[in-house]
Image: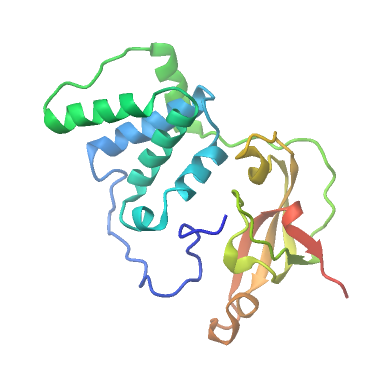
Length: 227
């Protein structure tokens, strides 16, 4: 969807500031949010594409005024409410309780089997395996143009790459289409490609010469470039 989260190529946000020796977490609560999200996906309450789409629905002001893990927390809260795991009233009551009792002990629930599963995900990741079908329409070297669409729902086609010409660089395999998976429309597997764009094609005269951008794009995002 078109939203403030799609920041690629936009002006006005300043340079990306790198933090030397940046820690994995800046606060202990971020660790808890990471685990909550992993549990939500391990228990199949929601999937990674629903999670990303929930972040996209935060609203511009809230998105820009919050940190990376605050985005995650907002998404987890939204999805747990939408999936019926917790009610809004119950969540609000729990939040107020800990705001008023900052040193109150957190709930302690032990589930060794779930913990082992989550730790396995932390070590190995949750990347979906490639699926056997359908057969890729394009091959490396083919010239393509990305669709110039403005979807209301989730997509992995960034705004700055829409309507631009590139060439197929690599075929990754066949993977779940996020645009469908985020909205309960099934897996809808499609070939996934790495597409190479010349920097001038994306950024015009302001682009650094001879630079290239590689973007992983699903087949339905692409059309053959007419000769």
